[in-house]
Amino acid sequence: VVLDIPLLFENNLENICDYVFLTHCSYKERRARALKRENINSKTLDKIIKLQTPDSIKLTKSDFVFNTSLDKSYCRKQVLKALNKVKLLSRS
Image 1 (cartoon, rainbow, N blue to C red):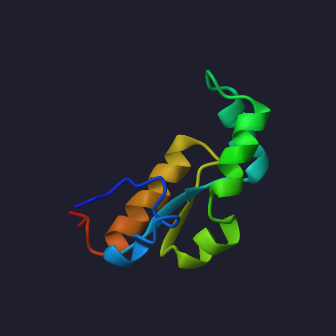
Image 2: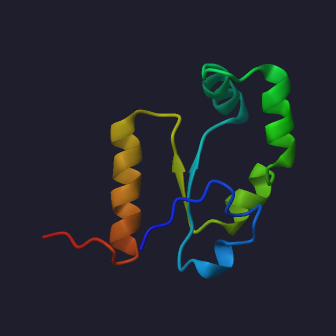
């Protein structure tokens, strides 16, 4: 079972998971991506970020971290490698 929980750490739900997979990119890049969305402005984004668990904690509590600042094929390779490592994907 795969869970996609945006507020996993904020709700202390990482303890119910066998593995935690985190997608991550720089603060600057996340901010730029978020501000491209409709109905989001800098003030709203700052409020949201303030409520989130700091990156340093998320990175420490995650079993695997996927760098999403590069192209999709690189991220896909990272995911496949991690799934193979935890035996959720077997290579034939």
